[in-house]
Image 1 (cartoon, one colour):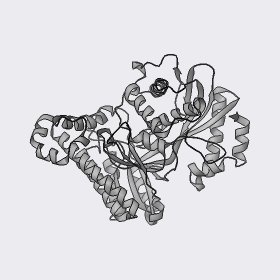
Image 2: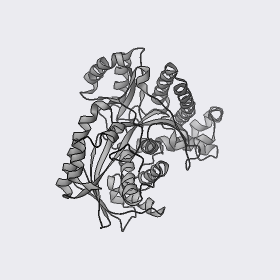
Image 3: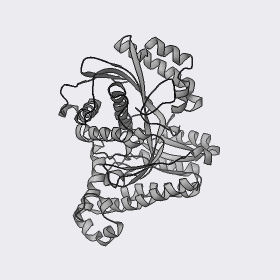
Length: 433
């Protein structure tokens, strides 16, 4: 921990460049120095002068395995260079106070009462309280701090701003009170617990794992309490492609019921076979019992079950293709994943708002702009938010111009995969905290 002025001097003199160079592309280094200096100014304006520490947690992009994690399936995901950063100061008072840039009011959580509060559901303070409660229950130390957060991960972007926020809070509590001793998998589980039990969103574990572990990873949730994680070395630039997400102008707000229906319908199918999750059944079971599934659970549930099993196989193929350097095969599987999400999973738009189809518009415009080049798919939870596109570098400028003419200026974000998850930002290459 150092004073605000010491941090400012180190940032201005390049003392953080080694660490920042790990987290961000070289061309964004000056921008990030300015961003961190602005963060320190904002912290001081809100909480006063004194010593601070800096933390960062990335957003994530889903590369494969759309809506499979919650039924013990397979996923492929990566952390990205858009992140949340925080300046924090521990306090003797058992209260966490967090001010987030662009939001009115301060989240205040009294650590002497960590029981869930109904009035906090779907609010960030519920995530803070839930993480602190779970950490305390598992024997970790928790304590108060003042924090100021600024984000480059847009809410509703499909880059999982909520998971990034959760991993950031875990990283802070781990660094301040547990000597950085919370490992990435535990951090993800703590975050999922808070989102499920306190925030009120029945999410799987993929978002939190991708934000926490860092890099490109394949995940197998056959045993959700102990998922198998494998790092997959990949640089899309080495194949001549940019990994982009395109914001469609929609928001994930008010879509909790749409998201909840996906795992619920899949699990309803599993229950017909006496199973907890679809991973315990098989595609042949679903095909053989199609008539009964459609009668009891509905047509959409049967289609979503078919998507689950075929998407699992696509993830296997995507991992194999990336390991073998077969990018053409990988692109084919990305396109197939997108078709399955659209047609069978049916998360391209909300049934409650059929006139709002930003994801479908972005997919159609991308298909017209790229032709037979590149690949594209529904990204993340779907229904609103973003699409993902693999764009040849030779077409990137034209694609950005074309897609932003349809979706709005600034909608297209080329991404770089970030090699680390939640970290304390130090004058050296970061390690997980």
